[in-house]
Each structure stands twice: as C-alpha cells, then as structure tokens.
Length: 203
Image: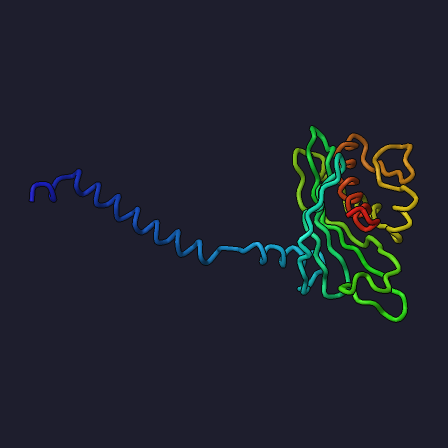
C-alpha cells in the first residue's frame, strides 16, 4: 500500500498512461494520414493535368552517364507519356527532378500508344513541372517561362540533329535564361535531355 501511495509510483503510472494513450493516437493517425506511393503519384499527375487521369506505370528506370536518369514513365489515358526525370551536373553536383509531359502524334489510321507506337509520327514536349531540386538554391527563381523554353514540337527531329538542351551560349539549342543560375539550368536541361534520348531510341 505504501508503494501505491508513494509519489514515485504515481509519476510512473502517469507516464505509462501517457505513453499508452500517445501510442494509440499515433497508430490511429498513421492509418488515417498514410499516403501510399500510388496515391502520391495520382496526386502529382492530377496536379500537372488539373484533373484526375488514369495511367499505367511502364516500370522504366534508365540512367544516362553524366546526363541524368529516368525515374518513371507513365502512359496517360489521354495518349500522353509522362516522365519523371532527374538531371545531373547542377550546382555543387546537385540535381533537378522534373515532370515532363509529352504528347504523341499518330498517322492515319489512328494508332494506339500500347501497340508498339503503331502509326506514331512523333513526340512533342508540352509541359514541364518542377518536382524537386537538390542543392539548387536558385531553382525558385526559374519561372514557368524558363521551363516553357524547353517545349519542343518535334523531339525526334531534335534528337536526329543532335540538338540537346544546354545552358551555354554555343550550343545548337541555346538556353541561358537566368544569370548566375547556369549550373541549375544545366541540371534542368539534362533532365529534359533524358527524355529526348529515350524517345530518340536510346533505351
């Protein structure tokens, strides 16, 4: 009885009750707030298109030495191909990860994106959205106008002509949009170049 009445016993009992209640609350909240990878992907795609889209994960992971990496390729129900790519050679060897929306053009009769590109005439880069950036403190200064400069009406033609994007002044495709952000721009350009290489046939 003396132990039960002691201040130490009461303190320990109180702490145990707090721990049990906290654990139960964390378990409930974890179940309620858990977001699966599929849900995160669906939300990212919805943000890009402004509405929900059905999609198929093509399970593509491909790296291009010194350029970047394709992390994901999704076939969208409207016929688009959506890429998530990471470009290398950023500031302090950092990276830039982008979502890149590509439209597919088909010859007559209308082809199907799932039929080995049957009837496919070409690809165009329609929209680019920043996913994340590692060590790139100037990425917030790169506006939608910057990303719009990477829109490309004919990806295959650009690939065949060797016209990859760079942030230097002497390239076939020249984009140097933000003074002082050359390395960040280079990483973004390389993320786009991964898509050009992939659609050009480097798979």
